[in-house]
Length: 408
Image 1 (tube, rainbow, N blue to C red):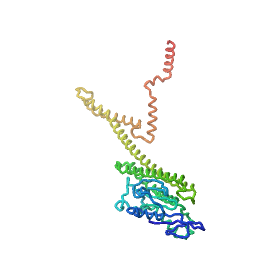
Image 2: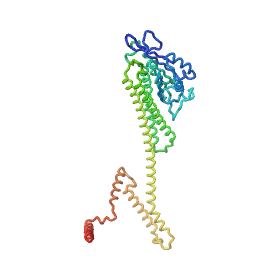
Image 3: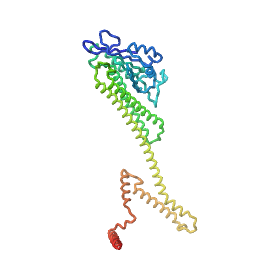
Image 4: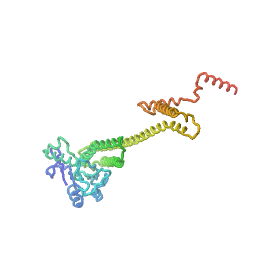
C-alpha cells in the first residue's frame, strides 16, 4: 500500500505532492494505491486502514466486488463515494503473475487475459486496488516520483498535477487505455499471418480451430470495449448530474474540462473497437477468398475434365461403332481401314481442340472473360429464323400481314 498526499500552498497557491503528511499546507486529497495481496485475506484490517486514511467506509457488496477477480466493468454510486471497476487487458509489457505463478486464477478467453482495476472516488480521496505488475499505473507512479524529486514550488509548473481525485482517475484510465492502442500493430500482424495462411496455394489449410480462437479473441476485445464504454458513460452521467459530489463544493476544475477528458477516453476506446472490427472483417474476407479460390480451383478441374471428356467422346463413338459384331462393316477387310480410321480420329480430336480454343475454353488469356461475355452477347442474337431478317422477305411478310388484316 502506497499513500500520496496532494497539497496546496495557502499563500502562493501552487500544488505539490508528498508521500508523508505535511503541516501548514492545505490537503486537497490523498491517493491510496493498494495491491490485491494487501486486501485478499485481510479484508477487515485493510478496510480499517482505508477508513482511517480517507474516512470512507466501503459497502460489503463493493468489498466482494473488489475481491472478485472476474468481475466485469461496472460503475456504482453511494452517498460518500463512487465505485468504478475497469478491466485492463494484460499486455506483454505488464508483469502480472498469471498461471502457476499467481495465487488466484485469471479467467482466460481464447488466449487473452484481463485484470480488474478498482477505483473508489470521494471528494478528498481516491483508492485504487490493482494487481502487482500493472505497468500502466506503475509508469504513472514513476512519473509522480520524478515530480517529488523536484522542489515543491517547481512540481506543478512543467506539467500540471491532478487537482482532484476524479482528474487523477481519468489520467490513470488514460494510461491504461493507451496500452490498448499499442496492440494495434501486433494484432494487425496476426491478421496478416492468417491471411497468408488462408491464401497460400501450395497446401491445404488445416488450422481452423486456431483461426476460430483468433476470431473469438477479437470478439472478446470488442465486448470488452463495449463494457468499458458503457461504464464510462455511466461515469459521465454521474459527473453531469452530481459534479459537486465528486469534486467537492469548491471545484478547482470546470465541468466542461472533465467532460472533454472523459469523451477523449471514450473516443480512444471506440478507435480500438473499430480497429478490431476491421481486423475481424479482414479475417472474414480472407476466409471468403479462401473458399472462393477452392471453388475456382474445383471449377477449373471440372472444366479440364469436361474438355477431356468432350475430346474423347467422338473417339469413343467411332471405336464403339467399329467394335460392333456385324459380319459386314465397311473397311473391315481393307488394309488401309485402320490407318484411315486413325486419321479420322486424330482429325476430329484436333478439330474439337481448335473449337474449344476459339470458344476460349482452352488457353484463355487475360481478356477471356470479356471475350466470353461478348461471345455470349453474340449468341443471344443468333436466331433459328435468321433468314426472315433478309430485307425482301421482311417486305413480303409485311404485305401478307396487311392483306390478312384487310380481309378480317
